[in-house]
Image (cartoon, rainbow, N blue to C red; front, top):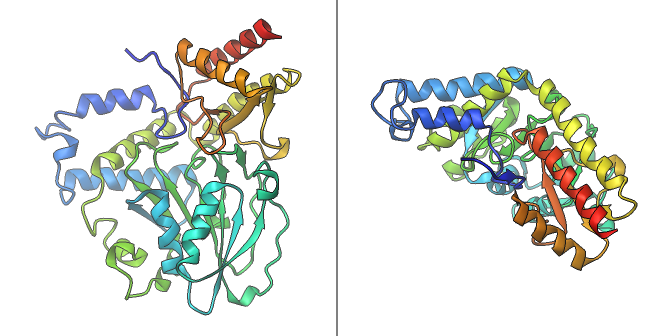
Length: 361
């Protein structure tokens, strides 16, 4: 039985329908007599799964033909290195907008691979807002601008993305891809680890404008070269077949639920009701992010004292809530409400929060 109220930040909750279908096919996939995990990645049976996953991504996000879709390994963290290795030339500068720890990590990896600069940062206020003022001193030498669209640790999220004409825009969308409608044409490279909204850990999805592939240098190690992965249709080496299969099932589920537009409506409802509970608590619950930067995926807050915060977390755990602890680097509380988290679970949490507050106020 599944009775956990799962608010983990990642790996996160999966749709029950996806888990059931995976369970049914685990021992014998489509009459092959083999598990999906036993299929050759060169077989037509597996090839159709990977192609269907690509087709669903194109449909759900309206990805134009100018983009290639890659299924890679190493998580978003490997992309922190791959992006500058492929896109940053010696006479160029890569610009980073810092809005949280993961943006910082991406910047620090890029520094190892070439010239970098911080375009804007919200570290001055403990990353509780999204930066909004940008000025690139030398646009002609800019290799790309990098941002992190949703900041899981601090609970902030971009609402509107900046535009840099003639400069590629790169985005880490690991924790909010497919949670809302986006215009892919605003970007030149998007990457996302799958373990938030897309499926299980093990596969990283990359959308890259095909015109950028020519920047990949032949001297790069093959496994770190976007062009080689593109030329081999993400089959240069054995891909994480089971993770890609779960990705396909999740995409199919989103499509059956009404697509990204319906996901966005549901996510707005979940986040709005949760933030209303925080705002109406008269300071008992204290949100971290500024109102206009609040994330719909990760709601972060503290209670009035550290002692009370720990009491809340312990009682929540005893009740059956999983994953409400804030990230180990900042503490506090964090509610991750990705696509697969049902509205009913959010309502149960809200009732618990209200009851906890009434007992102690």
